[in-house]
Amino acid sequence: MESGPAIFAGMVFCLFGAGLLAWTATRARQRRPVAHGVSPVASVAVASLVAVISLALGTWCLTRL
Image: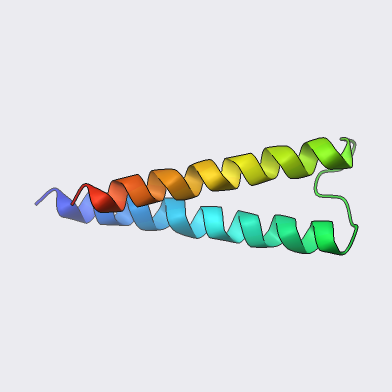
């Protein structure tokens, strides 16, 4: 009964993390800003960190089934 919310949360975290990581990599590769008004290095680092944390949380949720 509790596996439904865990699957949903895990998939949301994984999709968000994968999308953010792909978007950040694409923007960085094209040398375009990831966040306006912020240092390019800092914005790539923070966005990548948030994406990796989101992927890890999604993986953790999916392994708790």
